[in-house]
Amino acid sequence: MPRPHHLLAGLGVVASLGLTMHPHPSGSTDRVTPGTVRVEARARVSINLSDDRGKIRNFAREYEIPVGEGSGFTVTPDGVVVTATGVVQAGRDPLVYAANRVFAEYFKVKVPADFDKHRLDDPDLDGRLRACYPPQGRDSICLATVTTKITVFPYADPPAPEGYPADLLHPGSSAGAPAVLKITKGAEDGTLPTVPLGTTLASGVESVDVAGLPSRPSAKAPPKLQTAHLDPPGGRTFKAAERDKLDAFLDDDGNGAAVVDDARSEVVGLITGGDGVQTLTPVEDVRAALVAAGVTARRGPVDTVYETALGSFHNKAYTTAIPVLEQVLRLRPDHAVAQDHLRVARANRTAPTTRPAASAPAKSGTGVPPMLPAAIGVVAVGVVVAVAAPLLLRRRRQGASAPEERPPDAVTAAFARPAQGTQAIHVTAGEGQGAPPTATDPGQTRFCTQCGMRLGQAHRFCGFCGNPSDR
Image 1 (cartoon, rainbow, N blue to C red):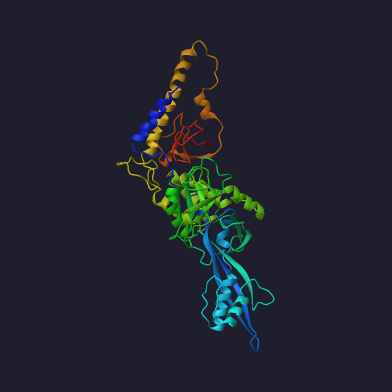
Image 2: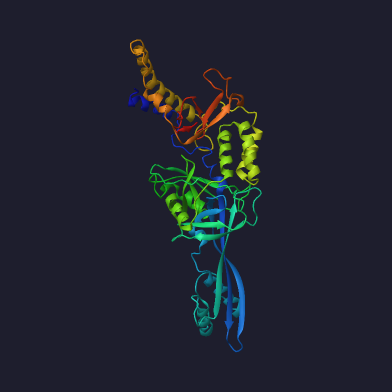
């Protein structure tokens, strides 16, 4: 068996190369960005002012007042959306704003168009202004009704210029609590892309991405992504050093954005905050809000086909990915991410699927140096050999005296154990993966969809990232 100091020495080799073990894997948000949406809420106030000085006069106006703008994510293909309650429910009273506007227009006095209650120097007008403000009672001179208009803008190409109207099914008790919306027109066919919603915010979750839409989405305005880290892991707060960049994200209409666990590519909560304080509302609260609204998160057929394509696409098996991405677009022609991936796949379909050797230890766009997979692979192979070699030698020595069949050793058992989790992608040898099939190579090369590394024929776990692999 390898000694602990051997394992530490192997990891030390990785560290000596200037590599980091901290992952923000490329493509980890590809499962989430198709289901990212922008949410805009506006209050429409109809107000009538009555002037009883002499002949009674009525002065009616309608005002549309911004309530909130932010991000959210779709959790069912027929249009159930989750966002932060503060995005769709006014923190300030729109009736006060409407009273200021209508009073200033009718009486021709200077009253600021804001959400504050003001005083006037003229005692008569000041009393009338007091009677125009809510709450409405018997002495009120202003009667008003408020309706909230919520619009959801999915990430699509071409974009939906007017968005989709939505109703508020369930608001939370605070601005950061989850709010559940339902699109009322435009999602009847049940083909909206959705996000993979996790079941729990695990204690080990640290490395995350935040995915939101700072503006109405289009091909030129895709979701914005921001890396972050939970402190402590599995907690509801982020590292103090990241407060400034997260504040900028939230100020840019990021409240309600999805928080994605990099390790599993699942949504584990939503983010809200400001003024240097950000909070993660965990996925357990999101699921509780869905239960209160009487709905259940679920994926759709578009998601199933799309995720089948992702494995081949990220393994650079472009010829295999192309027909699957084309099927996604037959089901959902405006699927913006599938469109982009299809363009890349068609442009690179003849390119080799193996990664070229890097000439310099430059970092990738995700902050992970390209030498990291090779370095960790060397360490992993060394560990496996160190474990397996003594066992194989011992088996050979005992072969003559003990020819009877023995149970599999620990290493074989570990790889042969039935597994659930990461899907294995099968690519034919003709996809540029190496030599033709032999007696020990049945003609298919398998890759881990979590990290993209090659899987051995009998291996049920990825030797690079350790994730289980379905057959």
